[in-house]
Length: 112
Length: 116
Image 1: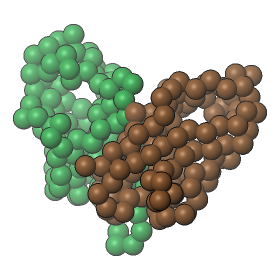
Image 2: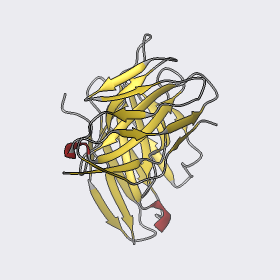
Image 3: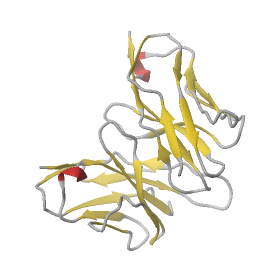
Image 4: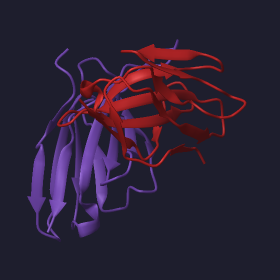
């Protein structure tokens, strides 16, 4: 079945540091890939997505590239801010409108 | 859009009791999803509806769980004879559906269930 593996956390960084959060996947079909973010006290929000190989999703300074050859979708940001502190989930979906399969999530804390 | 709403936000119940949660999707969103999230884990799919039809159910959805969407608008998720292992955050999401493209799922704030 489909699965998503995220690197172990939590991650603590200083403001303006470079961020990489690893995500790899296993899927039976050709998935769409997503990063969701959950800020403290809020619901899940879509951060970015990519629907085919070599696509790059980007939003709020975050980027992730769909790498089919390595089945990866790593999240990066060049300079994190305190306001980026949240839980980040990698997810995939096979089929146009079917269920999402999530990774375990990783907590990011950014220190001033 | 007012967003996806869920009620209640928190529920504490004793083992063996029945509980029911409600989800109101974004209006005109045909698809409605239920997920469960336990501490330290990502959300896990439970079931989804297209309009009033329940199209898929996860193996996680034991026979103590039942979900309905009677008029294709709001949905309810009922858990009968609750167990401590049912303690989790129950998330609802909705999305439009069409023939072109893939559509984002919009999540509600969740209902946190604690079974004592």
